[in-house]
Length: 219
Image 1 (cartoon, rainbow, N blue to C red):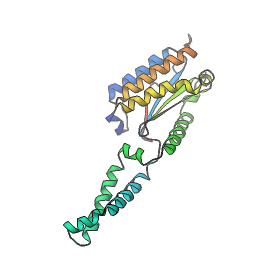
Image 2: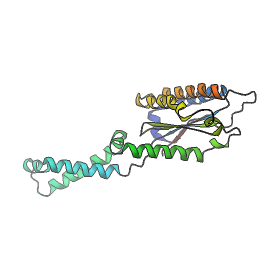
Image 3: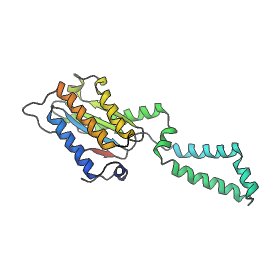
């Protein structure tokens, strides 16, 4: 199995992807539900992070007078300012790539809003709603924001309230926080399968309508 998103290789290898796919197969055997796990690098735009970080660092340096102290110890004329600005520019560029910094400089409101909207977009643009019995369910994990969303089609929503999935969401998020994404995703899939089995048990004509593979996207 090949994943084109290089970032995910830091968290999941080929064997992990196979195990996740097997977990989906096993969970779906218990019910008529179709589980689609999706992992996205981030849902929230981060274009604001670099300029905000750069301006913050410059302000910090000026307020504390670090530029003047450098001039005092290393007086190279106007070159001191150039050195300081260039150093802060490159520092900001690389720090802006760190997920923790991205979360720090993005409001919780914006992250929550963007994750929900991105999950809804994935749900409606995917083949989840094409199942005959309207039994598709999306397990959506947004890595940078450390958030998860579960969206279910009509047949499942009619029997399971949104609060039903809170435990599964907690399991998925805990897997990311504990830096064990495979265990988190598989545990979430297994629990989801148990819940679906209670409300939508497998029928004799249970067929696999959707792919069992983990869907991975950059954005």
